Every structure is written in structure tokens, then in C-alpha cells.
Length: 288
Ligand SMILES: NC(=O)c1ccc[n+]([C@@H]2O[C@H](COP(=O)([O-])OP(=O)(O)OC[C@H]3O[C@@H](n4cnc5c(N)ncnc54)[C@H](OP(=O)(O)O)[C@@H]3O)[C@@H](O)[C@H]2O)c1
Image (cartoon, rainbow, N blue to C red; front, side, top):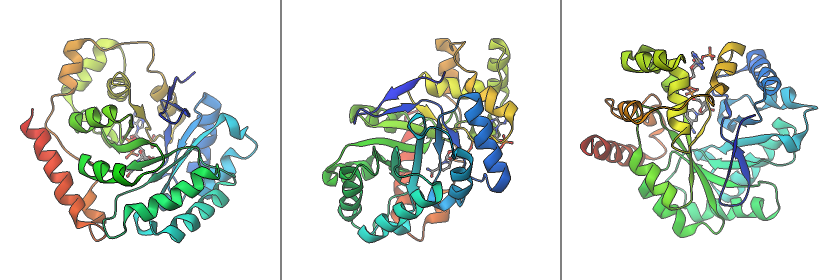
């Protein structure tokens, strides 16, 4: 069974979830069904992934209370009425009547975050979402968000893996009681091309993916690897029978830093993201 972590609001989140970005059609439906059979209970999606209908079909008949479903409102939909509309569309596609966690997918400085939070508070007060969080927020974004949020922000979902060790952000979030969910936790497959990680994996008789996931879990993060084959799905949850030693943990936190998800592609909405991400990034590099 996958362990759960208690969020600030009291809601429990399974520490491993199924990432579904770029899963579509029957492949998506099959991956979700296989994951549920294997014991996954946490599914990560977003309105922008275009797969909520398939996920809705795949979870149909499964006891809703046993599931933890995260979705995200796209950053072009952060006006009050747009959030409410996006939410209604999401739950209708997923064929559910609530979300366990609803995230702001990316910050958007053109829309006052207080307006977005007003809509999220309404959903939270009406028990349509059990918890609210953010995604791709830097420390500066979170500081601004915390000035306006009247409901607990419980999760920040960000890219995090051995090639993007955002330690300063993790420490900041931890101090604020915000749990970090690591997306692209196996660096979109790049961990398999790194000799140091391969050597560490061989030592523990595990794979590079398992070592990367373990490194994140040992730092108390939630991980949401995407996998479409049963073998990958199984492997990604088989990470609770070993522990990294200090030396290997340090090695995994000491690589050249690189992003695999490009914030530039959404820059037309918020050019300040690039500056902030780059400055956080430079800070990480300097502090190594
Ligand atoms: N909030 C955001 O802005 C944001 C951005 C990016 C991602 N995310 C979320 O995070 C999830 C995961 O991130 P990601 O999809 O970018 O990358 P990822 O999970 O790091 O990597 C996925 C890739 O690794 C492969 N893989 C998975 N398990 C494996 C294993 N055990 N052995 C070998 N290969 C394996 C998958 O192949 P197969 O498909 O063939 O199994 C897929 O090609 C997304 O699906 C999405 O839910 C959120």
C-alpha cells in the first residue's frame, strides 16, 4: 500500500500518484485502469491535458472516496468566473462531484491572484474541492500568494528530480507548511542516461527510476511519475523496500542542473515567470 501524507488542511494525499500528461485516448484509460488494479489511488491531471474524459471513464465504478484526484486550472482561466467554469467542466469530464486537490497550474501576473483565490475559496467553502494548491510557483510567487489566500495552500507542484534540485524552494515550502509534489520525478527518462545514477541503482538492485523516486520520497515529497506500461507502473511503486545511504543521497543532489519542462512555452501569459525561474535557478547553481 502506498503511504499517505497529511496536508495542512487535514486531507491525506497518497505519496505516489499517476502522472497523466501526454496520456491520451485508450492508452490513458488503460494506464489508469492498470494503475488502480496495482494499488494506485492518486491521479494527477489538468484541464489542459485533454484527458479528463478518458480518466472519468476509467475510474467509473471505482469507489470515489478511495481516490485522490488532482486537477489544475489553466493560467488563462484565472478570472473569477473562468475558474468556476473550468472547475465545472473538469468535474463533468471526470464524472465526479468534487476534486481532492485543485491547483493553479501556472501563475499569471495579468490576473490578480486575489480574484482567483475568491473563486477557489467559494469552491472550498462549498466542499467542491477538498484542498487547494499551486503549481510552478517560485518563492516570490508564493510570498505574493500567501498575502491573498484566505484558505490554506497545501501543495506546490513543481519540477523536481536529481537534475533540478530545488532545495531552497523545498525548504521554504516546508517552513510554510506547503507540501511539494515533484513532477517529472524521473526527469522524463533522463535518469536512465546518467552513469552515476545507474551505478547507484545497481548497488541497491533497483532501477534508475526507482532511485530517483526514492530520493524524492526520502525528502518527504509526493511524486507523480507518468507511466503507460504495467511494468513501469509496478516498478514506480516498488520503492519502499530500500533506503539510500547518506553518500548516495548527496551524490543525487549534486548534478548539473537542467529543466525538462520549458516555462518559455507559456511566456506569453507571464514573461516575469522566466525571470523569476531563471533567478531561482541561478541561485541554486551559485549555492552548489
Ligand atoms: N504542473 C505542471 O506544470 C506539470 C508539468 C509536467 C508534468 N506534470 C505532471 O507530472 C507527471 C510526470 O511528469 P512527466 O510526465 O513530465 O515525466 P516523468 O514522470 O519524469 O517521466 C515519464 C517518462 O518516463 C517513462 N517511465 C516511467 N516510469 C518508468 C520506468 N519505471 N522505467 C523507465 N521509464 C519509465 C515514461 O514512459 P512510459 O509512458 O512508456 O511508461 C515516460 O516516458 C506528468 O504526467 C503530469 O501529471 C505537471
